[in-house]
Image (cartoon, rainbow, N blue to C red; front, top):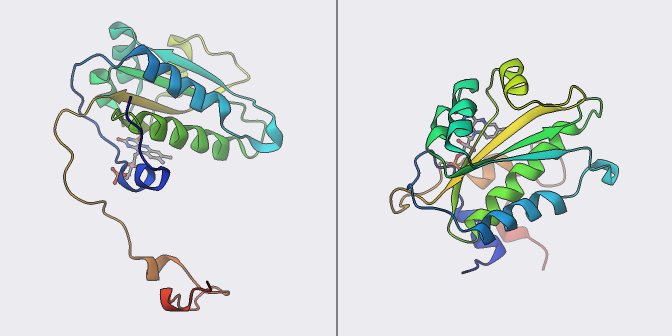
Length: 177
Ligand SMILES: Cc1cc2nc3c(=O)[nH]c(=O)nc-3n(C[C@H](O)[C@H](O)[C@H](O)COP(=O)(O)O)c2cc1C
């Protein structure tokens, strides 16, 4: 299993929505679940649960229950991230898990995509989700169908980073060493 430098992993990871039918090895799936488990949560409450979906029929159900993630039908497997909505920060925690599982998979060349648009009632019924939890985000995984080329479409650093106060231009030349 190959591994990437942590920054390279972050910088090159893209959200993919088309996957090769090739099976993802069980060791990589386990790493993905370990990445979910070891993510930090607010006050370390770990108010979450994760549903691993590998069954083709259930991936189809996930796709039908989604409003913006129909592509998950073609994923090799998916993880439904459940969090406890009574904690105000539960969506921050869900986002951290989603990013960690995506990076853990990408570290081994397995691509992924996330979706949050779903018919929650249908999904929670189909996957028998306990009423104290909500499905916050779903991540689908698989090997990329095509070689990944191209760059990320992101705003330039000067537009996003300010120096000391909001609105003050950031100049990389002025970084303290
Ligand atoms: C909170 C969140 C919700 C998202 N919801 C969806 C979604 O419903 N459907 C989808 O296809 N992608 C979804 N995405 C993926 C984003 O569209 C993707 O991260 C963004 O376009 C950047 O993609 P890139 O890294 O490949 O450039 C979601 C991402 C996040 C972080």
